[in-house]
Length: 125
Image (cartoon, rainbow, N blue to C red; front, side):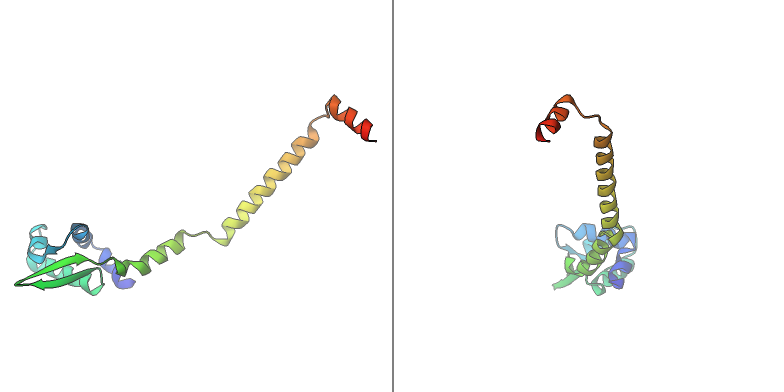
């Protein structure tokens, strides 16, 4: 997960991943898409490949790169865990329910009984 996070930390590498989102792209085409030197793009591709975020295949003299999303699974699981509910969340929900219940009971107790309620009480007594 650390290698994936480090690879994603660089904006150029994130742009390379966006470029590869929908299609396979040759290394030369990737290099032409960025205002950095070809060796710099090559280093970015190596970092992405070592992190497992891209896959490369030799096609003649060119290397073609494609996106590999499997490497993101561990990082995605970690992020879901961070966004998950804490034990306190359930406790606060229970407290909110109890506050509403007590408030409803107090409001009902404060309302004077109607004539129909008084008649029913006398009839059942």
